[in-house]
Image 1 (cartoon, helix red, strand yellow):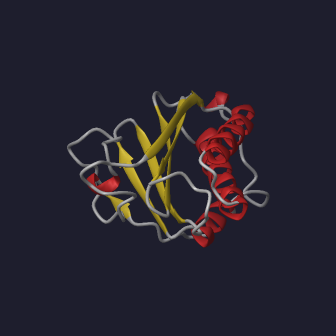
Image 2 (cartoon, helix red, strand yellow; image 1 turned 180 degrees about the horizontal axis):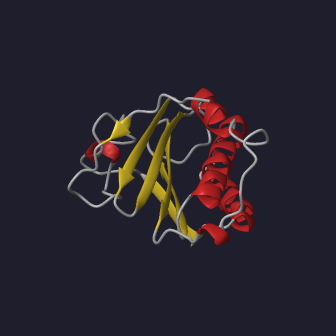
Image 3 (cartoon, rainbow, N blue to C red; image 1 turned 135 degrees about the vertical axis):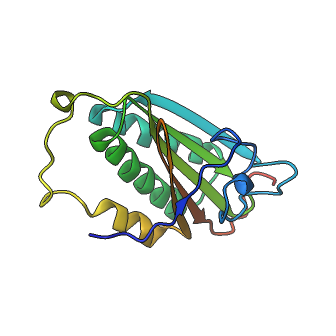
Length: 169
């Protein structure tokens, strides 16, 4: 399956600036002057048995932020697919960043660090895998991939439903 994610040149700033405005072509997740209104970060070893922890982390954070259940479920699925890819094909660590702006949830997943030896990553049967990025593309408002010298960052913007009990933005 060929995906048409835009490849973004890495900016001179660190990968996690105060706002997604530093990444060319990325819709803003919040007012550029103040950055995202809420954010959370988790870094774990890039192992398939850690993907569940990223789902639980995402669920917990989005519950705390009072994100609507349909949007929360979509975000958890996106995080699950991206971290599963990072664990299967990526480098030593995977990082999940959630940033809540005005009606947009920015999700970024990175695989960084040293490349594992081929014996540390199992062979993947492509007949059983490969649909996850299509699911991410379907659910997301915007998807972008940024290659860096120490890994790959996948950025996703998820448009959120308006909800009465969301945090004051």
